[in-house]
Length: 280
Image 1 (cartoon, helix red, strand yellow):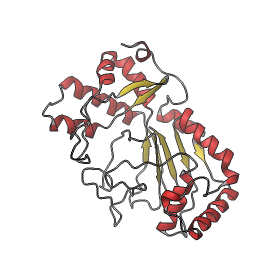
Image 2 (cartoon, one colour):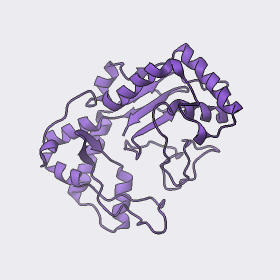
Image 3 (cartoon, one colour):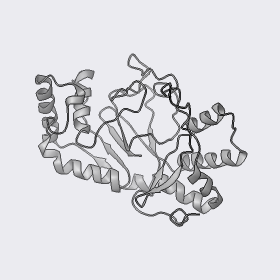
Image 4 (tube, helix red, strand yellow):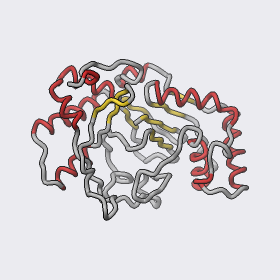
């Protein structure tokens, strides 16, 4: 094993669901002045007739939230890697206005990128009229979504209206999962750091390969920090496309990751006005 992948990890991003539930560092609430500034910023950009891609932290000003955003970003980047805002204003606004509010708010955290073939910058998670045109994706399809890692540095999800069965949301610590694998099955680490090919899920250009064309490590170290890329569906799809079925040992490795993620996840209510941020 490479030296930095043979040692267990420590720090605030290594946690179990029970441990995270006992802390409140990840909990954030917008102060009253910040809520007022959101409304004023919305009015300004609408008056200026700016489209989403023209809206940024410079013209969507939220001056009283400067320190608030710094604390939020610190928790996401170097804290537990997860943050939850519980009072974003979703009542009494149209869907179009909520897009602007959410986009402008998130512009103070980072630069938005598209991660789907629709090239949409705001992606609806719904089985309704705004369901994305992503036939190979699980977005908008009823049922449980397995824990996975998305492709951007940071993902954010705002709840405007919850499904009738009020499903909870769940997150897990990649660092904790890595430590448990290192403890229980250290012989798996080498294969997991080598990784698996990923399917492009039919979203590639004509000149691109249908799979990644190379193995994507599940675990690696970047700038001294653990990096994890895991989406079992995309890996298994690539193997089927390449007609290279996974070995029983490889299947056992992925089963172990899923079991650890499930058993040690943090589960929480996700209601209208809640935003979750996850460090990928």
